[in-house]
Amino acid sequence: GISDETKANWLKAKERCPPKLVDDRHLLLFLRCEVFHVDLAAGRLIKYWDKRVEVFGEDRAFLPLTLDGALKGDEISLEMAFVQSTEHTDAEGRRIILGDPSKLDKSKYTRESMVRAFWYTMHAALEDEVTQKRGIILLLFPHHAQFSQFDRKLVAINAESKQAGKLVRMYEIFDLKGLSPRHCRL
Image 1 (spheres, rainbow, N blue to C red):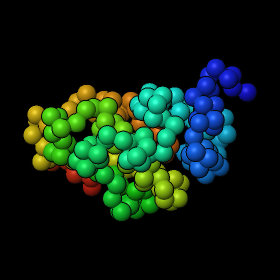
Image 2: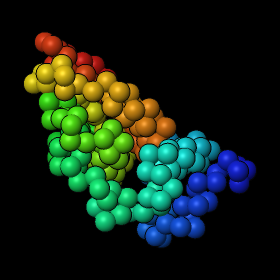
Image 3: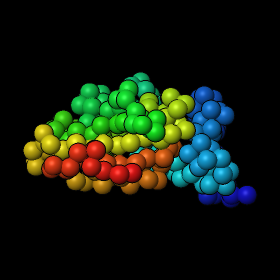
């Protein structure tokens, strides 16, 4: 029941993407995120593809998230691993993703490239079915970062990007001076 104009990027994705990027497994991500509320999942799917086109551009949005696809030229941002998935989960089974601004060096990346690397990290974590069902904890750990390394604009872009294009329930913990994860409640 959604107009073609509203879902234009989703229709392009269905037409231009390799089949495995838009198959039932892809759709299941959105259903799991919205606990199988179909209308909400459909809205999230449309927002996801709109944001993906915004983040990657028309020329790369419909390519796989690989170094020879949508992430071509983003090798430095990926190597910095500002945001990286761990193999650890919390007591509820949510995957822990660590963000460490001390790894940032603004002279070596563009914000746009780092946002694409962030998307890759989220998608890589979502290869795990348990993560799809339970969600992600994003732990930002700025203790070792110097003030000059903290890129507020990048954080704002990532925050806006993950809200509009997220595929998973996400919980955030900011580990700020003297406040560790054990002091935070979700």
